Length: 312
Image (cartoon, rainbow, N blue to C red; front, top):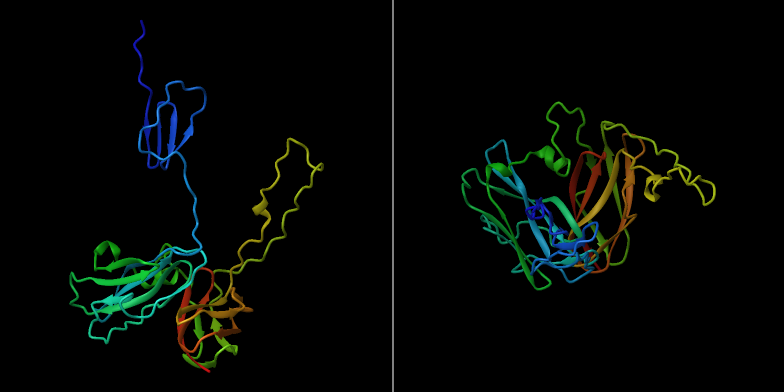
């Protein structure tokens, strides 16, 4: 008489195959073939939900890492993740948007106060002294009724460098990489009137690396009845234009009591390796706004802050 064999179980990061059932990230799918003895352990959900919230979710501050400066001080670098897909949130400096310790300031450490949807990395820095030691910089945000915190500490494994920031967290190729960071010139301050467009001009330059590539001609998509059944056709998204490298400029809101509307909203291409771009911005409320100009060559970027005072 053959001895009964126990079904084989394989364990992976998010995959368990046992007793004829496949569990993927907590969900279950039937395995191939009949399985009279299949068993679902209690407590596991039976489906995977893909829910996107347009509004109502919190903004999570992130500690990205720290940079050692030549004078011995350190920059604690932060970003944030607005978990909403559409809702933009303004949180003024105060109990709901604070950075501790204050490091001798009056309470405002120039942290972002306007939060755009989704993830924004390496957007904010706090400089701490050389003797900071094992202390922590704590950024606290309370949005939509939920409090989130990020803790910045000088942990060796979290050390980064300027090139990591310039490449938005991409792999650092080292000092031998010939590509240099773009430069940009823009006025640091400006004044505007409510609902009156303000022209923003940027002088940008780059070394021409990485080399711009032309947009290839899209592949023709076969129509019904023109392709033999045995032939493969391209996926829908494979005929889309490839991302074009080259010098470009874009704008992003950093602070302000209400939304700043940029036109155009997308990246603006610079003809060649240097030139001027123009964007307009409109503000719906009185107040002080901070916006960021970014010049990028597709691999590396540089930001510059502009403060705009809006009156009636």
